[in-house]
Amino acid sequence: MAFVSFREDRCKGCGLCVAVCPKKIITLRSDVLNAKGFHPAGIEEMDKCIGCASCAIMCPDSVIEVER
Image (spheres, rainbow, N blue to C red):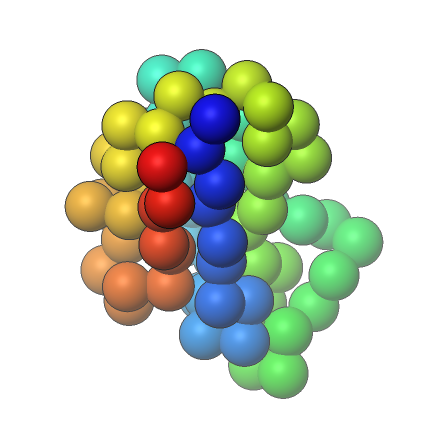
């Protein structure tokens, strides 16, 4: 099982990771605002992650880390 972590303080909520996820499990968290005023990305159902790292590759700010 893979584990994906997001540096929420640096996420600008661009949504590129949401668009590229093949399992469609990444969302912009509407319940959270970071210090910059953005809704950061996150995963609620980590057990569905296949560890492809497409999200980390697509992220322009390198806020996503995938551990397999």
